Amino acid sequence: MQRTVDAAHAQAESLREQYGPPGTRPWSARQSQTYETAWRAWRDLARDVQAAVTTYATDHGEGRQDVEARVKRAAGQTE
Image 1: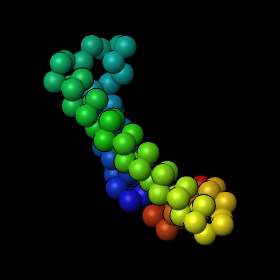
Image 2: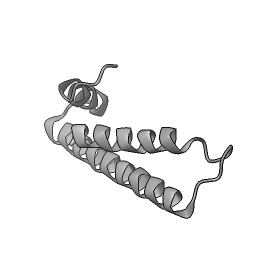
Image 3: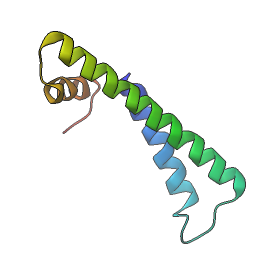
């Protein structure tokens, strides 16, 4: 799940880099819609991972932050 979140985040960031900051150069309606879709996907996936981490931590009597750190390490993220 975390790798999927990371990929969705990378996609949203890639689009933002490709389109440039919206304040300096207006985006087309299509660009805005594409970015908004990517951003929402990332946000929703991240929310689902946080819920799963919280549930796991609660069920196993562990700290949520500890579980989250392990998940991110396992997914290949550096802290």
